[in-house]
Image 1 (tube, rainbow, N blue to C red):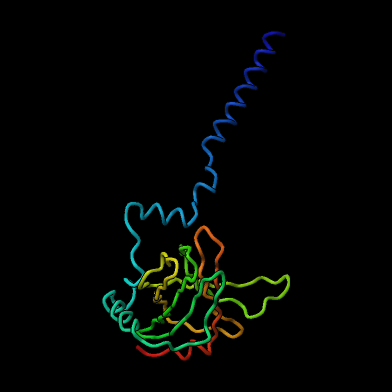
Image 2 (cartoon, rainbow, N blue to C red):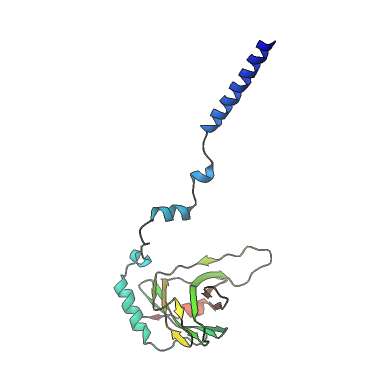
Amino acid sequence: MKREFAILTGSLFLSLATNVSAQSVGPPNQAFINPSPALTTSSSTAGRPPAPRWKHLSVNEEVLKGCCEKLENDKRRIYYLNARDFRMGMQVKGIYTRDGLIFFRFLLCNHSHLDYEIDSIRFYITDNHWLRNAPVQIIGLPSVYTYGNVRTVRGKSREFPIIVLPQFTLPSGKHLVIELLERNGNRHLQLQAYNYTLLRSRLI
């Protein structure tokens, strides 16, 4: 009887060990096989700064800088694209185009004594009307070049940055949203523009 019990116990341990070893040689968790694209990108470029987006364009940095310097002294071309709140103002003074690019010339005006730390200036396309319980499509537009100060607007001061994007127009039923976001604050501003304005961009 003892001998039979020992044989049964040994075969039970052997089967458990076989199952454990079979599981250990199986494929690992898929979550670790395919890391997210963000993780893959950051690990592949570790130790190297990201390439400027203008590197892939037909114009070089010197041309972009020259265009922006030329626009600095241009007069105000648009009088209806502006937003103001929290004693902070944002205006689009002009929209220009050259070589498949579109240039947005801004005025950022801080009327308070508190510095305005800029977190980002975002461009995206969204629907004119949002239907209830319907998905909202938002298309982000990355910039390719930035000219001027887009970090801080000191108290009681102004900044005149220029932001360059790849040329685009708006599909039917869509509009462009430009957002100015404050870092560690809530003084956010927003503008909306339509094809009427974009199609009247001036040639540099």
